[in-house]
Image 1 (cartoon, helix red, strand yellow):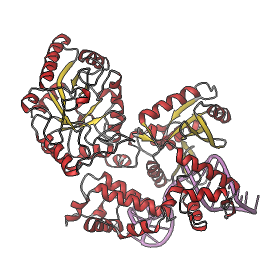
Image 2 (cartoon, protein in one colour; image 1 turned 45 degrees about the horizontal axis):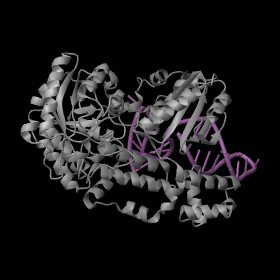
Image 3 (cartoon, helix red, strand yellow; image 1 turned 120 degrees about the horizontal axis):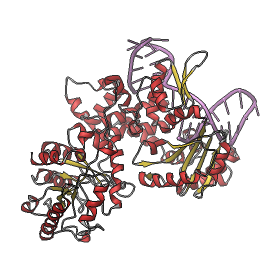
Image 4 (cartoon, helix red, strand yellow; image 1 turned 90 degrees about the horizontal axis):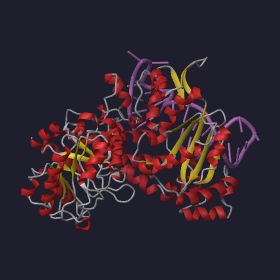
Length: 576
DNA sequence: GCCGTTTTCGGCCCGACTGTTTTCAGTCG
C-alpha cells in the first residue's frame, strides 16, 4: 500500500472523528500523522518489512498509529475507519459546510430533528423547527437558510492566478482609503498555495471603521457576514470569502505572521514560544508571567527572532520541517529564487498551436533574462494543434540553426520537440529523428483514460528511451477541472532516477504539475526538475514565477532545478 | 493520540465575533 493511501485513510479518520465531536487533540494527531506519512521520503510498507526499523521513531507516529499502519498494509483496510464510516451520516459533513454551523450544531440538528439531507434542513428551517432547539434562535435559523444558499453557490477555491487577479482588484479599490497606512495580503495566498479557499487582508490603521466602510463598497461585494471593531468577513464575486483584519502598527508583524499561517505552522511556533517561557498572539510576543512584558510584534523578523528563529519564507510555513531545520542546522536551506532561472525549456510557436514565431519567442525570452530556451512544438499526433511530422520538424530545426547564427551570444535556442507518447506506448517520432534534437520532452495527451498499468508503462517506456530527456506535466492534472490520469507516480520516479532523466514542473497555473508533494519526493530521489512555462504566446512566458513559488513550497534548492544551470552544464548532463 | 531540558500523566495556540445567553458556548481563522 502506498504512503498516499495510508495518509488518506488517517485523514478520513480525522475528519470522521471530528464530526463525531471527538477530542480535538486526537483528531489533530491523526491529521498530523497523515501529513507526516504523505511527506515521508520512503515507503511505510518497506519500513514495516525491515525488522531493524520502527515507525514510532518518526515524530508524530506513536504505538497506536504504527499499529494501524501495519493493519492497513497487511489487510488493506482499517476496522475502526469502516465502523466510523458506517456510523457517520454524510449529511453531518454537508451541514458543517454551512457558515456558522460546526460539528456541535450539526450533531444537534441531525439527532434532534432527524435531518438526513440538506433538503430536510431547509424544510426544518422554513417550518421554524430549528429555532425551538436549545441554543438555537430565530437568527441562527435565518443564518442557516441563507448559509444553505452560500454553501451551494460558493465557488470552492481560486487558482493562484485567479486569486492574484482578485487581490489586484481589492488592492486597487482599497487604495482610495486614506486611513490605511499599510495593506498586506496574508493567508494561503501569501504562502503561494496552488489554490486558495479565501483571501485574508491585513491593514494597519487607526480608523478600522473607515477601512471596513471602504471594503463594504467593493464592487464585487455580495454580503457582509460579520463585522466588529477589528475584524470583518464578507463574500465577493461568486460568494468567495474575503476576511479583513485591522491592527495597530506595533502589532503588524505579529498579525502578519499569525494570519499568514498555516494553522499547523502556527501551532508549532506557539508551542515553541511556550517552551521558551513566551506566549504569542496576533498582537505580539509576550513573556509568560505576571507582567506579560511585550518583546516583539512590529515586524515578522522581530517575531521570529524573539523565538530564536530566522525569518521563514511564507512558502515554507506548512508545519513540515521548517522549524526542525533551525534545530538541526541553525538555518534554512537556500531555496530557489525568481532571479535564478536562466532558461525556459518548453514552449510553442505558430508552427503548431502557439501564436508567435521562433524569433519573437526568443527575443521575448531574452528580455525576461533567459540565456537559453528550447522550442518544443507538438508532434504530429496532436493533429488539432497542427503537430509537426519529421519533415516539418527538421525544417524548423534548420530555421533554428539560422536564427542562432543571427542571435550570436544574445540567447541560444535549443532544437526541441514535445513528443507525444502514443496510446500504444510508442513515441510519435522515430528514434533517428529524435536523435538529432538538442532537447526532447515526452508527454501524454491522448488515451488518458487508459488503465493505471498501461499509462505507467507508457511513461516508463518513454523514460527508458535514450533520446528522451524529460517528461512534461507528468500527471496531466488540470486544477479544478481534470484529475490526474491514473499513473503509478512512484514507478515513474524510479524510472526517472535510474535513467537519469529530468521531470517537469509545468508552471502554468492551471497545471502546476508536478504537485508540491510529488516535487518533494522527486527531489529526495535526486531527480532534477525543470520549471517550464509551456508558453503558447509571449504573455504565457510570465507564468514561470508560479513554478518558482511551487518549487519553493517543495523546498527545492537552486541546483536541483536545471533551468538555473549554465547551458554547458545542461548539455553535459544530457550527454551522460 | 502524541509526547517529555519542569512531565510516563496532563498537557496540547490563541483571540474575535455572534447569538443566545444572563456569563458563555460555538464557530472561525
